[in-house]
Amino acid sequence: MALDMQDFAPPIHVGPPVASTGRLVLAAIGAYTAEHGFPPTQREIGNLVGIPSLGHVHWWLAQLREFGYLDYACGKARTIRLTRLALPAAGGGA
Image (cartoon, rainbow, N blue to C red):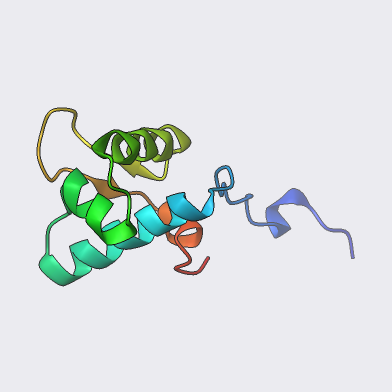
């Protein structure tokens, strides 16, 4: 029996690999949002993950946004939103 391309699901884009701190940031955002019903602030993310510098938190958010794992509105509070790519990266399954 010959296989044709319609027999295969399209590849799933999984994004670039994320360092352990990035995975912690994604997991913290997801857990906080699930518990409180709204996303955390940058300061809250830093407290949850153990990053004392807001500059480093901002850097991680910018990196994760560039990789497609989250999105947010610049200059607006509590607008961080995880994308579908974030689930596997944060350890939430494939």
